[in-house]
Image (cartoon, rainbow, N blue to C red; front, side, top):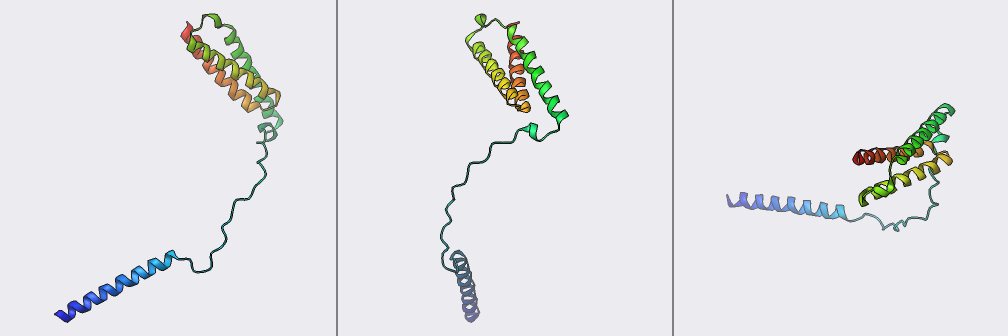
Length: 135
């Protein structure tokens, strides 16, 4: 019985030692260390392509018309707002609306029609909300 116990312990010790040796070897690189690659300086990415260069003429015209229409409609809403009667937080919203409209017009001039529409849409949503609170 003692011999069996000794053999079992010896076997267990051998298995454990073999397991430790393998895990230790797995963590050590097998060859010479390769020099660490440092990131190279790359050229800055080119500016994003405008959507208008990726769509057909009909789609471009549709986007242009929608953007212009959204800008005009939002400007009509803005004209209904008396800026002198606005509370402080409402003045901030009004300023944001005007900023979005200005940027939308710039995007339209640059033929970035999707951006123009998106900015005008944000301005419209804020203007509708502001008009609702003023009524």
